[in-house]
Image 1 (cartoon, one colour):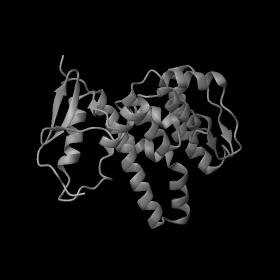
Image 2 (cartoon, one colour; image 1 turned 90 degrees about the horizontal axis):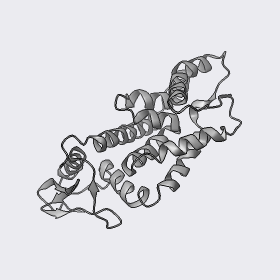
Image 3 (cartoon, helix red, strand yellow; image 1 turned 90 degrees about the vertical axis):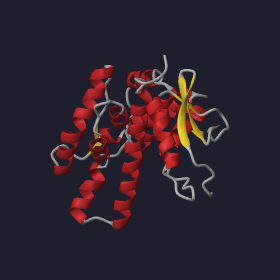
Image 4 (cartoon, rainbow, N blue to C red; image 1 turned 180 degrees about the vertical axis):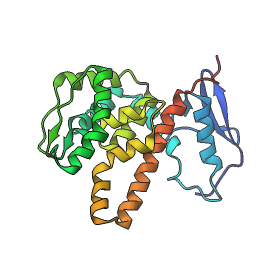
Length: 237
């Protein structure tokens, strides 16, 4: 698609913010008003439009796409999105490990255990860790507590968490990435620990390197999205 606008800006709409293209309001993919909760997020979304050249690259709007998902999908049925996220808790990457005395198992414990312990402490839950890949359900109380925690999030937080957990194959890592002090790159590296371990042993594959880079970029953008959405410091009162 050819670029059809010149000016990109963000304006207040009540207590929310709206991106304008040549003064025209942007709408979501479902045709709803694309209203976001913070000025810094709206400015960043306007910057995505402003960065386009003569031809619009539809794949270069990660913030816009997350905002649309939050408004069109999550806000419509947050419970369904939370339930979908629970599958990443039931088979959380961080809970399936190599034997504890193996070199990989030791690295997994060193990197993963602090992340699991942090969520257990904050939510007063317990995760089952396993050596191997045979599935074992997590305690019902843990699943219920995780669901209740997710339903406390707003649509923008839950939208970001869905992307984070999906890319990490871990709800534990997704939740950790919502922390304002989180290191998104380090968390993604934790989720990719086994793949990186195999690359160390057998060498790196160009296609795998490219895929990892794309997934890392998506993970970091989702973390950025939620932190921008939460920054209400300059919002109208």
